[in-house]
Image 1 (cartoon, rainbow, N blue to C red):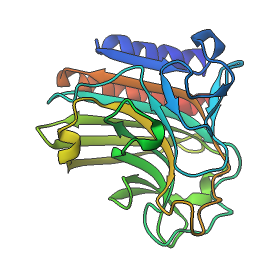
Image 2 (image 1 turned 135 degrees about the vertical axis):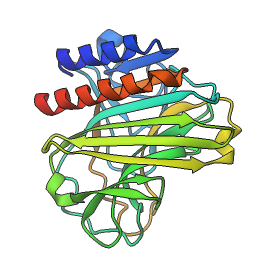
Image 3 (image 1 turned 90 degrees about the horizontal axis):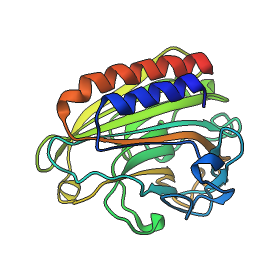
Amino acid sequence: MSSIYKHILFVFSSALTVSAVDIVNFTAGEGYVDGNLNNNPAWVAQAQWQVDSSGAGSVTSNTGAFIRGLYLGSSSTNSIGDQITMSLDFSFTSNYFSPTNPPSTNGQQQFFLMGLANTDGSAAAVPQLLGVALARGASDDSLQLRLGSGGSGTSLGNASDFDGDSFLFTTTWTKLDADSYGIASTIVASSGPTVYELNTTVDDATAGDSSIFRGIFNILPSAGTAGPDVNSYDGISIDTFTFGVVPEPGTFPLLAGLTALAFGLFRRRR
């Protein structure tokens, strides 16, 4: 991660006066060691996530499905008015979209999902709550920013046009009332200037009853281990993971402005 991008994230965390903002680069200087992400600082993860702590640091998955990483370093108490923001700077380890066939159902081929988890337990058993995914469209070649599995979405265009790209993927969840959440998600690819957005409100009684939220990311095809999509995962490499909790909604406009600035720097450095 470039020094200027680190600076923007530092300003982002400092200006918001949040209860917790963590920026993780998976480096040796942060205490990370090569090997399984699980049991590295503040993580529960499945074995497919492997840390490379050298240089700028990264964590990379290999081929597989339902590969989760749960971050334990910070959490939200899920109070009304809380805002949780998670950001992932990642790339695919090889040409990723061209070789695979479109799925038969929207969201079936969810290349990468970020969401909230209401447990401190095993990553393998964590339920997905209020997730947003980068997914393949049903029966076509579109790449989509989607709500959960098969929910509403925004098309980015033809999936094959994004082979070799890196992405900056950010989602903010705001608890509006007992069971209602506002979700604002953006993703930008290194190949173009467009920032794609997904903005929606959802009701989720299970999420509303939760006393804790933690950040989770996942390689998740809803087809599971069967069907044409099972071998579509050549790998994803995450350079930077950011997780922050904002207890006061009045700071959200500042968050939006700083996030937009980070997007601009992301595109420039790519």
